[in-house]
Image (cartoon, rainbow, N blue to C red; front, side):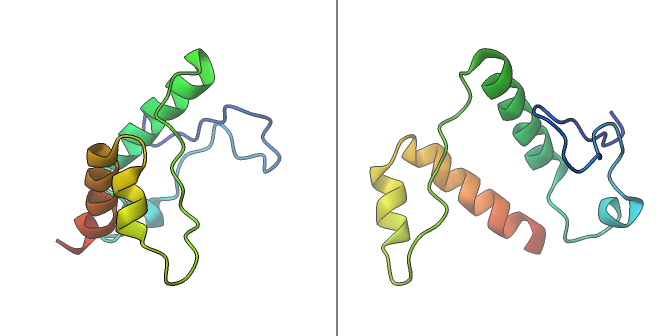
Length: 92
């Protein structure tokens, strides 16, 4: 797909059909390809079938128990794996 930008809603920014900039693609700190593919699959599932992964809370107030909220939320193991993968994969 050569990092083509796909919009599943009205594109107010007129970027649908374009490709990610080469500077982003060559940045060693960019998200791994596996995360981009996962994100695309979830967008397809959500927009075509309405059955993607649940939306997770990402706006935690200061001094809140983020780990506790993740453990008590939906799909806790998958969420924790995603959080660890997305936060630490670029620093390996």
